[in-house]
Image (cartoon, rainbow, N blue to C red; front, side):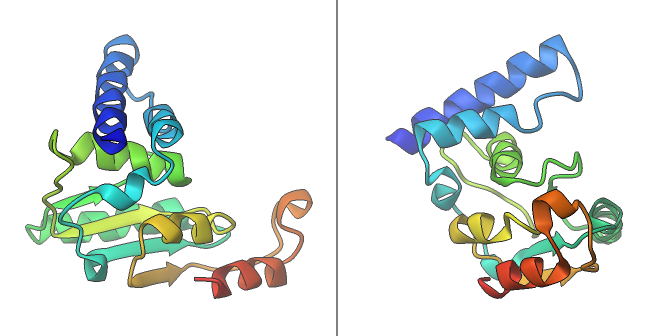
Length: 158
């Protein structure tokens, strides 16, 4: 029951935000849904994990996500993707809520998600994708990530 409450709340919040400011609300509805149901993303129906692709790395995540999504769409595939770049769990929860039916069912051929390299284990715990593309790993945001070995250890968890 928590899932449905979270889903409907996220959908309503997404509609309200869109009315106020188009292009906004790529993360907030999912964040709030995760407060209601911490396992929110786990409960969506009809997701074939072999058709889920995570794209992560230090640089190039958005470009690669857009490219793969474009190629698949041009070949007639229905894609669910976080093209806005909201690449934490809240952003993925937002796009899933937006694309799902009121009962939480999704209809897509592929799911292509840009994911923050540091938070990939948290995302994977709720959405166990079977495919991952790593663009690159290099020293970036030293205060946050330290060095590439830190990120490699995070990715090994997945």
